[in-house]
Image (cartoon, rainbow, N blue to C red; front, side):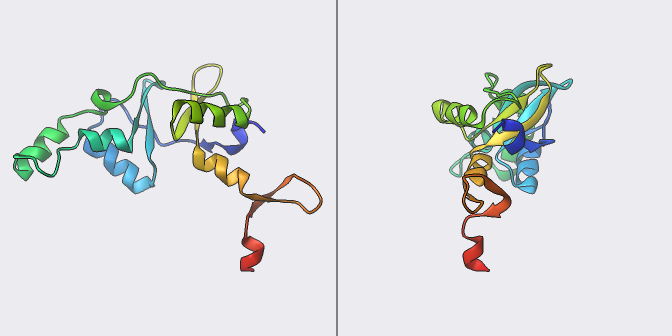
Length: 154
């Protein structure tokens, strides 16, 4: 199975000029844990919820709330993003993508086409959703949209 079948299409992205609080809010609103960073339509990095948490002031800071907020608003995604982005191709085998995620100890990666254009994101969750589908009776082929245990709930 190809990555294109499992990936999330039209991923939410951010500019390197966006502030850390803006990126954090976007992730929280969309319920996502990573944002590909695009500059002039080109993938230049990725920022994760962990990267943003590490950029936040600690709970034991001596800064006032106003000072911490002001300083944090001045930090951009470009300052905290990871530049060496591990990517995959939409026609790559999903097993190869899973191996890449395991080898690099990452939870997801951008999917780019031959032109280097971001076309999606594939995550461990996407791979698990596919793995958890119930096979059709008498075959090993998954039934589209059918999850393990659904027949037990019916």
